[in-house]
Image 1 (tube, rainbow, N blue to C red):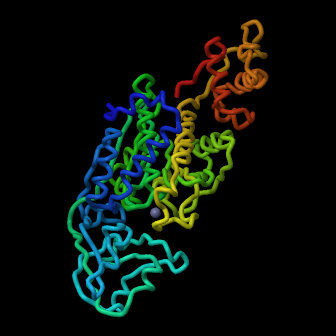
Image 2 (cartoon, rainbow, N blue to C red; image 1 turned 60 degrees about the horizontal axis):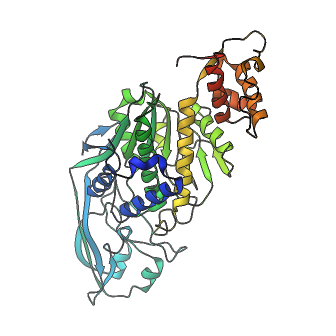
Length: 445
Ligand code: ZN
């Protein structure tokens, strides 16, 4: 099922090594010129197919998707600006950020004044190349450092862009991992940015490794939930998927949009539009017991694809778990969002938190106390001290009392974790013990 040979050893790998594998995959993806359509996306998704059995879907240009239309497909082979001496002063081959993404083809001579109307730079960050797009306006342009822009001399310039904008397809990748239930957990990331690492190669590699871990686990222990991984171009990709899969969308019970998970900043969770969905509470619970700083923010109608999943016609329970969020780091959408801005350590930590959230959702269930009249006699069953030798024996006994008291069919383990302050993992562990002593019965879900 999984094709590369590292996966067979996944469970034996310590997590630091997974961070290194993720960073290595990110390094492979980095040079590719991606966009919302085109061969860069296909090439990137094929690289991921070497890791996970991803299916590539192609949606034709012109397909109506709600209020939008699948755009023409864009591909680029080369682009440069030459000065009067024939020297390349801007060269796409040096960085794909130099091209205004979705630039139409051109081959023309012009003055510096004319050229400047098509140049984009960052005066406040004079050594960084900005990332700019022109998806829905047929335009052309180049992005460059402000220092380079200021150094351009008066004179004649040759502008050359070898691109095509034509009917084709929008490409996206999808992996479905079936569980025992059709209820679905959505993991969605955008795959449309060119050489930018945190936003969002980090999301692509984390989603890939999350899928790898899940597939590895499914081999021995089937999950309750079905998982759907989407690798889609931002905005138009999620709108396209939703428009073509309304029935499947209705099965999404929880979801996370994966973006900006590789920088050194603290984890930040942006809640779903609902604000109190199980996914919101699950992430809050994991972060609260993660022994690291984190932030919780309310839903806003800007950011990544959570905007589409949480549009009022769907209002899905989808949040977004990132490190430093969207647009809040100076490297955002510039050439400084590079291979050194994203670290193996941060990727690894983010992956562990995502895995813990999925584990919580899988284990969150409601039990019924089979001896609800008075407390059952735990000592007689050897349950006091059942966790003996552990430093947290007292906590385990208290956790047992919480689970027994609130297992009335009305409270899930997550409800009990929130009310008691004990960690979900501890409560889940004692619930399994109580179940094995026939004191608890699991409600079917
Ligand atoms: Zn972005």
